[in-house]
Structures are given as C-alpha cells and as structure tokens.
Length: 422
Length: 113
Image: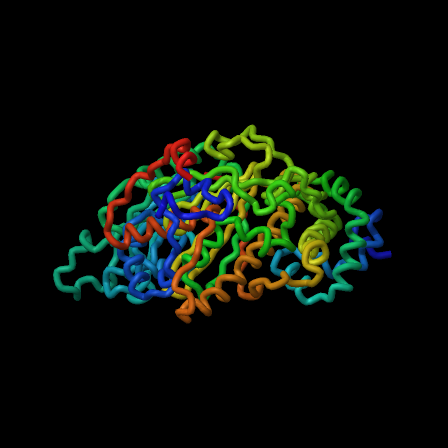
C-alpha cells in the first residue's frame, strides 16, 4: 500500500527520497532477541571495520592501547610499531591463551605475558620463551601474536577481526568517508573528553536515540531549548539526509536567533563548541553542512554499525556503542576540541563539555527505562517518524546483513515522480 | 600578611575557593553535593566578575598561569560546571538524568602525529 496509504500531514519528505526503505513499523523483538544478537555478532561485528581509537592515543613507537571487544569474543592490542605504523593483534598468548596486555594502555619495548613470560616484539613476533629447551619442537616463527586487520581513516583507527576482510577500510567507508576526509580532524583532536558507562540496554536502543532529533524538543527541552528548534521549526526537522549502502548522515538545523543563557553567552564569545551562532563555513568540506544553510548546527555521521562522527564548525564528537550482551552495552561519547590558545577559550570548551555531558545524561536515562519494558511483549512493533529515517535505514541494513543478503546500493528516488504520486 | 591566594583585584572571590578544583570529576562531585542555594551564590558572585576575569586570565598562556591566576581559572571552570544547574535544571543534577556516578570521565591532551 505504498502509494495508497495515508500519511499524517506532509511527513513523507525523506521517505520520498529513499522509498526503498518502506513505511512499515519496526519489530520490537530486534532489541531483545538472543538469536538476533548472535547473528549480529557473527554477520556484522565479526565482519566489518570497527573504530577502536585515534592515532593521537599512540604517538610514539611502543605506545599501545587495549580494546576489549566482547562482541568479537576478543581483546585487541593496538600498538605503534618501531617502523611508525599502527599494528593490531589479538591480545592472547600463543602458549596457553592468557591475555598478554592487562593494562588499558601503556608504552613498552616488547609485550611479555604475565603468566609464563613469553615475550613478543612490537611486530608480534615471538622472541623469547623461558626454558625453551624443555618444549617439544616449538617453532617460534609460527607462534607470533595473531594479527588483526587494521587501517586508518582521518586519524581514526579501525580494526576488522575477519581474518580475510571482504573489503578495504576505504571501500567500507565509501562515499561518506571520502566526503569527510578533508574535515580538520587532526587540528580539532588536540584535546578530548570522553564519558563511558555500561548500560543495561541493547546497543541499538542507544544507537537509535543518537540518530534522530525528533526527541530534542521533548527530552532536551530543559538543557538545550531553542538550539535545534525555533518558532519556524518547532520539531527540529533536519536540513538534509544522505543514505549510503550502510552508513548515513543527517544535517541538523540550528536556531540562528538563539538567545543564550548568561554563561553560554560568555562561552560563545570565547570559543567554539556545538551550539553557537557563528555559522561560518570557511573550513568545512562540501560534504559537511551540504545544504550550506546558515541555520545549521552539526551533521550526524553514522558509520555502520556502531560509531558516530558528528561534526560541527569548530569541534566534533563521537559516540560508540559496543555490545556486551543482548541487553548490555559499553557506551562511550567523546568530545574533541582544538588546543585552547587562551584560558578563556579553555573555559568555553569546558562549558561545551559540561553541556554536552548533561545533554547525553538526559539521553542516557531513556536507555534502561526503555530496555526494562521491551521484553514484556506488550508492544510488538514501533512506529517510525519520517525524521527517524536513519533509524529505519539502520535496521534495514542490519536485517539484510544478519540474513546474509548482499547490501544493495541505495536507490535515490526521482523526487518529482514521488511527489506526484504522494 | 600572607600572599593573596587570588589576584588582588579578585580578592573578594576568595570566599569561593572551595570551588577552585582542577578536574571535572572534582567539580562535578562538588556540584552534585551542593545545595542549590550554595550553587546560586557562587554562580552569582562569579558571573558578576567574569567580564573582568576572562580578560585578566587571557594575559597569560593557558599553559603558564601563575598560581593565583590558576586558582581563579579553576573557579571559572566551576562556573561552567554549575551553569546548567542554575540556568537549565533548577537543581544540582540533570532532571530525569542518567546517574552521573555511573559515568567514567577521561580527559586527554593528545599529541598530533
């Protein structure tokens, strides 16, 4: 009934652009099904490129960090090698499987297993086995740490636990990655503040909250009133949506007539952060704020499956949702700023961090409240608004992947034809 | 007479030195543990001087603030911390918010490679 069904008002703008996603409700069980979660693990998280950090975390040879990836049943060591390149290995000793690096980060000349002292060079090669003579024909050259595919994009480190990744990181990020590559990530990554917590909710419950702004006028009515909404746009309708085969972007409206609170006004005078009135576009590549609107705040960039890079004029932030179990997720949001040149700029950045943190605390409350009733079975399906099209798209891609279907190219509708039919 | 803890022209802000805290963790904990009355008097006192405080601090490099200016700087960061309590929520914590005590905050100054 695609062409004949009624809609509420003119709520078909993004549906018309991407009609292949349909208008059906979303089955509630996708958030609670153990079977679905098992398939997400095998068909998605163990097959695709996952962000694990940024290059600035390991500037020098021997610098490393550990990323525990329960969803991939592993832990990964990411290290800058003696040759300056970034390498990744399963964090597991070849002897009897002990995790080699226990600290979340560090700097070392070699990795030594704390269990029996087996030692590995930064390139993963097994270099020393205590009391080696008493082993039975050990071939050290075959017992390196197991490598994990690793590559960088715009300073972000991605890994892929598939022993034979089906595509390169560049191909995986595709058009979205190409459009964002000239964003000044390096300069804007001088300082970062991250907030991490383990949430008792399915990873998609959390992800979906961050890929729509229909909720802003309600959930965030206290924290950021009139920032993403105005008299002419009371429901924060977005400026643009771009969907890719797996990823998606949404360009967000901003109220240019925002009347800041007293402390916000001080912060606006002295620096840059997400919500502000200066909509200068001088540094932004064409893919950012694609409509070149003067009423713009930021673009959401959803890198499938669980990493967001949300870019603004003078700062950006990321979200990551790493599943631990069907109803448990490690959620991290990180806000990045350029180096503050003055104390007043640092005050401004601190205000940006506090507001960002308090806003995501409002988001955070919904996750466990939602999950706590999802398994009741009281609701079989959920209805998505046209502005929630990234949610619709995301679930569509997940469904395709867990069913082993090829990811179809996104078909852009012929706008005129669709409008005529609606 | 002991050396002034804050730059002389901001002497009267010394009664708020309990808010001069170096980390977000400390500032946030102080906000959450304070009454709105305590937060509001600190907010009002700081806000009234900010137009002078920020230009004063900006004489110095952010990495080379003298001790007394550092204390003053930390007071401005606490003003940023308490601002939403006063301007947005009307209470110390986020209204209907996720429990901030469950959040682990990490701040990093990174080196560009």
